Image (tube, rainbow, N blue to C red; front, side):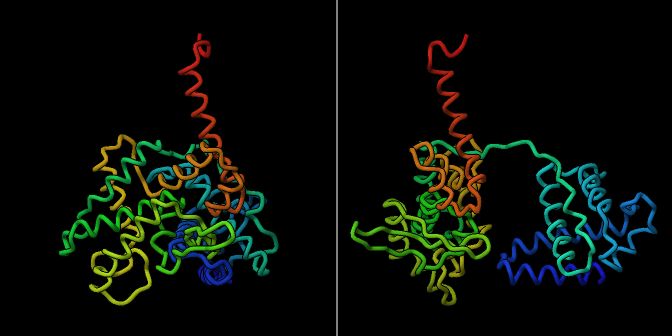
Length: 335
């Protein structure tokens, strides 16, 4: 099986079986393309150390991939002349290749999976960056003053401000990824009723098309209702019919890039010292919940993490903050 055909078969498989987004599929395709380019150009050796006649053998038959290929690829990424990649980037690209070789072994194209014994470089632990509750309130307040998105297309700034406020309030209230937020439809925002009363929720579709239901706080629900009543009908009238919750000024679904600009504009108006990205809302959501006493497994469910280990990194953030407060405030914490 030639490497290019094997790659296309694998990409079709993960698109169907795992329901990955086009953005994620593009990342896999890019990583495997980089691996194929390196294989074609780099001197490679068999697992027993013997020289092999260039990478053409692997390009023609995926069954020729060996452990040395993957190990050499890792070394290349970490030392490449055009600029070495950070350990996290190397680990991500190796993960794509290892997933591919595991699939190839399962299909019988490889006798053994050469990626099973290749480990990525250990990346230094980076704690998520969250902003304070006070700074988040400043950021959310700044969103309602509008942005350049609407004024350039003849839509009043106050209507754009309603949309921006609703988007940012939802991001902070739910911890949704930016791709999840812009992928929402109007019907995903709903109200559940039981013996305890009514609860506003949003149905979020995450990675692998897994759905989760996340509560909406009163501030977020009020901001979304105001946007739906006053602003969205104006935007919708300017484009084709779409169920998308968040619309651009021309009536189409708001893109991830446009949502990123909304966040940057609000952060600029709020004059925040810290860099603010879409993931800042997700990090702040988790950190503020844990600081407020939420159980880590509840936060895991709200974030849509497959493993609680991913969520537990936020407990390190709050512990770090507690240490700093203690060392600053307690009279006998320092010498």
